[in-house]
Image (cartoon, rainbow, N blue to C red; front, side, top):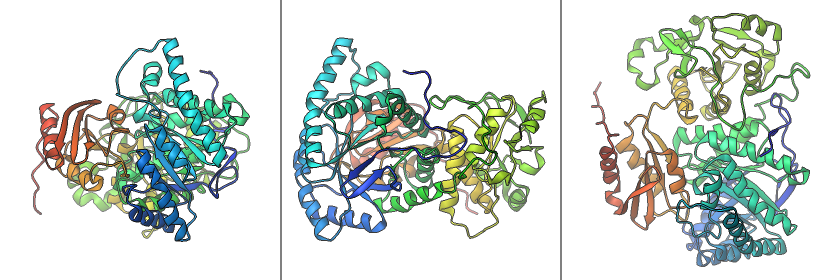
Amino acid sequence: MPTELHYCPDYFAYSRRKTREIMVGNVGVGGDNPIRVQSMITSDTRDTEACVKQVLDLAEAGCEIVRITAQTKKYAANLENIRDGVRAAGCDVPLVADIHFKPDAAFEAAKWVEKIRVNPGNYADKKKFEIREYSDEQYAEELDRIREDFTPLVELCKELGRAMRIGTNHGSLSDRIMNRYGDTPLGMVESALEFARIARDHDYHNFCFSMKASNPKVMIEAYRLLVARLDHEGPDWNYPIHLGVTEAGDGEDGRIKSAIGIGSLLADGVGDTIRVSLTEDAVYEIPVAQAIVASIENSHLSDDPAGSQRGTLSYDPFSYERRHSHEMKINGHKLGASNTIRVFTSRKKWDALAHKIDKLGDFTPEAVAEDSNIIELDPWDTASIQEVNAMREPQLVTVKDGCHNAAVIHAFRLLASKLSAHHPILLKDTLEPSTDAGKDFLDTLLIASRNIGSLLCDGIGDAILIQGEEAPGQSLRLAYNILQGAGSRIFKTDYVACPSCGRTLFNLQETTQKVRAATGHLKGVRIAIMGCIVNGPGEMADADFGYVGGAPGKINLYVGKQAVKFNIPEQEAVDRLTDLIREHDKWIDAPAVVSS
């Protein structure tokens, strides 16, 4: 792999990545087009009426491209009827067929829809999720087999003017890739590039890439590495990028995870289409995606407030490592070094909560900013930073409010690049504290998640302060949930829950709520809830336990990536899951509810 890789031309000022335009039906993606918003319907693809209705509902909500699963050739054949129904209703939204495992389904789907999504991890693979050793010769033979199976689809898409997404998922890498690269961002990128080279060999270029993962750190690193590798391959590898955090979940947690992963990449100019994957009705994804896109306009300045002044990144953008600050104590709490990332609040908010501080539970503030001797700096003022660098004892440092109206991510990156590593850093969601009690909380949540989450995923930050939300309790809940979403401080049960689709073998929304109700008190336990096998075993890698659809009405339970219980009737599965958690000594009884 090349040693000098860059995923954007300037880490301290915004510029959108320049890509070629591809056409998905009548919708241009990349080039000078706006960032497009996508989603996916959840109905059974054989149910024409239900599918047409969902497509129309999504288009009415502002969705610009709609995806439909096509798990077999029979399902794919009904895309003709769905397309005809959508067009008869006067809707020209482009349709995408989502393909896993079945090349014949892709061939059938290409006749009827404007775009085909293929997953390099399982296209033409009889994947059994087995570990095997591949010699160089066997690896080459596998590539030849993939070329033989994939080339006809490439030629058909070229002939019919169809677009394609080469969409790698962290949860479903092929055995071949896993053997050589592991389930790493590098493996994800190599998997996609193998397919892209085949497409290019046939002079087919109407495609884009995606690198989805449920872990925002993995997702961010994979996309950055992909863009860097594309740039290294040459200027004509300038293909558009589709962004998404897969299995983000529902509620605030799903929105926070999505904003961390998607928002941080968009703020660096990477991304041409997005999908927010929520375990909710698909129409609820659209306003969240639209808000993420809209917020990017306020994530940067049109130019650098201090001219050409630059720093050198304090971290490797392709590999996570926490910044090496030194330990210090504030309000009796250790912070810095490898200590827990602390949650600060303002004096005004602390005083407003003083009468119930001991009842705030998981959302208790740990320090008051005004009482903590925080040094506020202008990151562009190198002389002032050098004065602080000369101090031997660690000092808690942050960016000064109102500083040049600077973009938060770029300002804190610049601070970290110049500040001596032994000084801990306090992150802020905004440099303009809000005084608007009526401000839309979704916008506040998305901006705070993007700004703080992006920096946390780069290893920057020893404490955080939410300033964009005026409500004291709500700002603290947001702070803790961002730490959880970034994987920086796990204080509650962590769920990986996929959005529903036509492949799903049970009601994901209802099941997710049942699992939450039974396990929501298990702090630090990570549970994956997957509708089918496509991403199940791979996304189990980060989970302690998994609940995966195995057949209609039947559930398989996992410990890590290993299936241990099979074909459990759905009505028994939540109880069997809690039994499994007990067997592995991860269970505690829920605390008694005290009535007030």
